[in-house]
Image 1: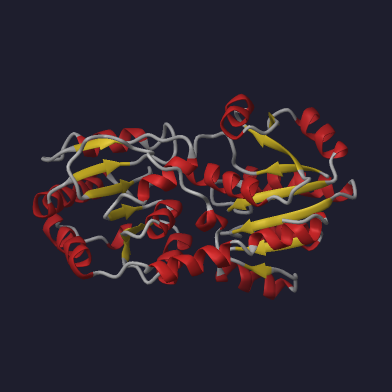
Image 2: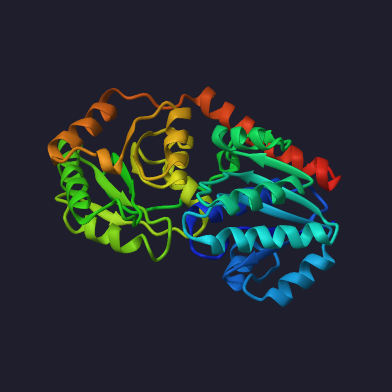
Length: 348
């Protein structure tokens, strides 16, 4: 059984690389994966699986023709916020595979936002042609219900990603606070200044070290360095390209402040407290699911001391997922393997 895996792979995004790692971990025995990647050499080196250049349409078309299955491997592939190219690329490849009669799986998808009417029609028709569809959030589930498309609602597969130990061995004083920022129009220079000054006050109050963790390389690195240079205490930029090491890092972190979805998820999976900086509905949905606090960027307090006090209150008395709760999330996440086994006809 040969399967082409399609996603936002090879772009240096920690969350999407984690989704690929989880998918490879959950594929049934006997499935031979071929990963579409923006950097196939790196993908093959990191995961030990054959890869091909996602930009070579001839190569991709031939690979799909020779395969038995085509899998969207997690993430928010069907969205048009970043423009129409995204949905046309991923949707077009799925329609190509469907036209060739392949088994097609939209796996662990977060659907939307879809702002253009034609995008909604195109997405609906594409998903309706899939052999199986699984989604990771209730918003996507409600959309599919409205469209009358059968689906399974599971949790994000990264919950079940096996962490690598010893991911970060820097000799910095504990406790560790992780900060995951990303560029976004709503993270203006003024708001970044408030976040940075609030973080400095927070660090002075709790001590320890700040780990600035860029998830998207190189886009997040500049922000990480800007913030790190203004902190009064020990800090470092922790750049981990292996998603299993990234997951392992958060098992050693006491408190996390994160904009990125998988920063929130990994922090919760690691047993630490987490506070979300919300720029996207999917981040708000996850925070709600794990009963963790956060605030939208546009509604952040305008004064650093007010923001730092919010963090300190959660640091001191905020809830975190218990071991049984984390195990329950992992168990639910592992259900993502079942649809793969059902469609691909092999045993997980």
